[in-house]
Image 1 (cartoon, rainbow, N blue to C red):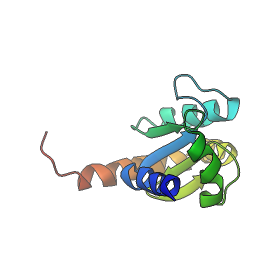
Image 2 (cartoon, rainbow, N blue to C red):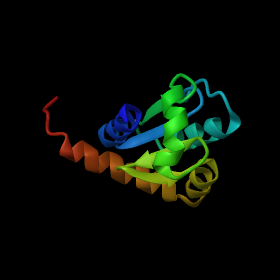
Image 3 (spheres, helix red, strand yellow):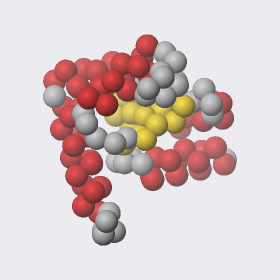
Image 4 (cartoon, rainbow, N blue to C red):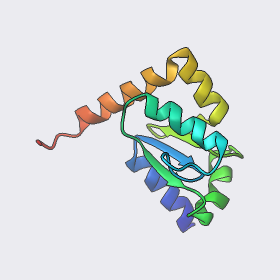
Length: 114
């Protein structure tokens, strides 16, 4: 069960999290590239997990998420969807609003003075 625990922890600790193949700057597949580009265009920080470097997560996450493919975008603990959904939301302006709202909410909850 430790892989599932790791997934739960990653989702809990990162308000905006993209499970993808490769990294945002060096994606290893077209779908991950499109998803990362859309997220980067929103202008907020986000975390990512390269599933090619984490075969345990690659194997377990589809069953946990009940979503068979990658990339997977999670915002505030909820699965948003994969590449098609991310790109469609971006084109409609919905992704930007969702990401901005999440970033603002989580910035407000981080009370450490910098």
